[in-house]
Image (cartoon, rainbow, N blue to C red):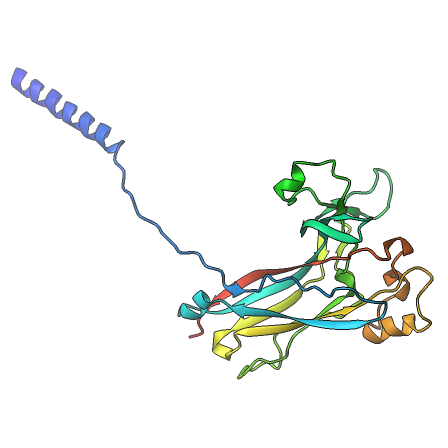
Length: 268
């Protein structure tokens, strides 16, 4: 009887030991991935230089599938947007010269005063992405939000989609528009332009035309200013796109933000 009891105790000890061991057991599964950009976008600035009211100037922006995306058989097409965002920079001479770095400003919605029915407003925060050399001197009086060029810049696709079933799979946006609005819920409604590239359509590069329609200032607009605006965008109010005389001679800016919104696998 003693031997049987000892055997049971021994088996119990072994069971407890096994439970204790299993609590510390681990299995390592190695997970790796090589992350590449789907799009190739040149980072050179689109500099229109010195311009004059009611001039019309154009530059090209190329957006292409990256070499890594073209080499990967598993994926076929990329959907993307072009968004316009405010531009901040370090200037001097009352904003007429860029003397330091530039970067993207962030739109921050501001709710109406409590008890009022006023619409939401916004401000542009230039501190979030400011380069370190600017942050080190937060009292720099030459830290500026550049006057916006975004509303005067159109985006038109090349319309070339070889062997595609669609005549054109890219969006378009005329000059004299609002780059964004703040809706009744305090959200930002961006006026984005859609683009799409697909290997299966032999459409691997979009060449966008970035077309600048130069504004006029104060009471010094030409007599045909209203016609000039409405010929480009019939829904635009010319008065909304006349710049205050205080902005004359200043450097205007806009950051074009190219963002991937979807990647699809190869068509079966």
